[in-house]
Length: 219
Image (cartoon, rainbow, N blue to C red; front, side, top):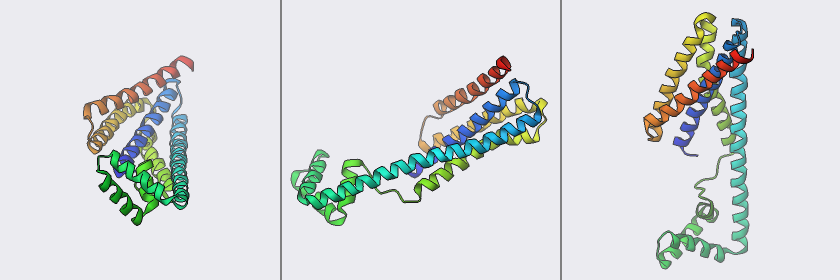
């Protein structure tokens, strides 16, 4: 995974933490929960949400790494069984990219001489580099920390602000946080700032509003 993609994932997880925790608190507030219950809900949501986000990311990246390792083993076996056939397939790949037959053949032979498995993986699967063994663990930890950092925004307000005013402050803090993370994500990924911001605010504000109305309606 590229650094840019990793950073975007980190921002997305932080936004998830902000929105999910704030939405939960708004639902409890709509139901008339006490300050003590809101504190418990915010703390539990931060911990459970972070562990869930980290676990999901770990499982996804671990599955991706296993698929890469399986592909590497298969390519290694195919090279051992029919080296020239694999070189021909690799040359065909480069011909399809626009190289002349002679150049494509030479490129295939040189890449195979340097690292035959890597050459096949790049051509057939688009894998530039096999994922490190520790990558799933670090991805999981990073996602969990990002989620908890985002969730910490409404959590901190719940801990520090009286229940009579915290709903308004949570709403304002969530909006400010989403604006900030949207700006960072848009700049990092070279995306349209307005579209990223609108999507984030629609999801964030919509989640809080629906949760609050659900609390009012059902409790």
